[in-house]
Image (cartoon, rainbow, N blue to C red; front, side):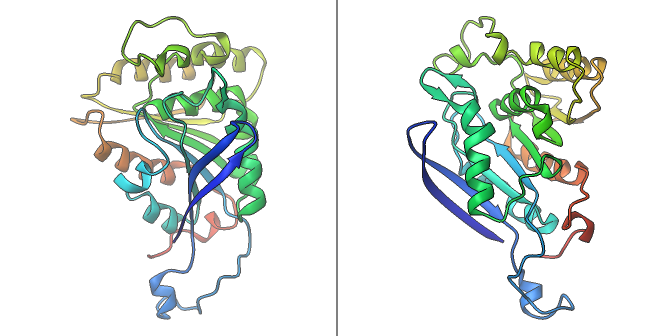
Length: 265
């Protein structure tokens, strides 16, 4: 596994930003000759990619710091990208256009500088809490860009315009472009195809009921939705660690590396 922490200048955000990129690489069993073939850094194809979004108060470092996502990515031969979106819910808030940054600039940077695929059928987006909202926001705004959406304890009622200032204060209706309920209905009305959706929440999480109801709404609108819940879990990293592994096993893979199956690490 290769883990790269990268700082680059964003022309959309007009400042330097931090990202973490996890790339599969030579494993220990391979280097010792235990895999049955010699180790090699030559790549046969670009890697599929999961854009994995953090929650409120976190940044690009938390997913790799609190979970085993590096190991999961290595086993499944998929690139994972974490970015810092501050507390702005991955939306266009004030002078920061995280919509354009995530939908246009970041993929362009990654697919030009790293061996990462730019094919929609090899691109996935998922996240926890605020990142779950962000995954719905981007996946439903541009359903043609993602093969699947994954959400773990998603903040489905987030309004980016007030969230950064008062995440638990009075909720006001979001603008249509930030309303994931309206965006879901728009996908249906425009006759577009939903990405496959994986939604999950712990039964002790305060977001459980809202998340389940939103998953039901998506299903009613015609989306292919898989719902997963874990008894006794709240809004916590142990749940999100388990869920990101389940999500990676759930996604459909017909890319070059997916056809090879899991590898040992």
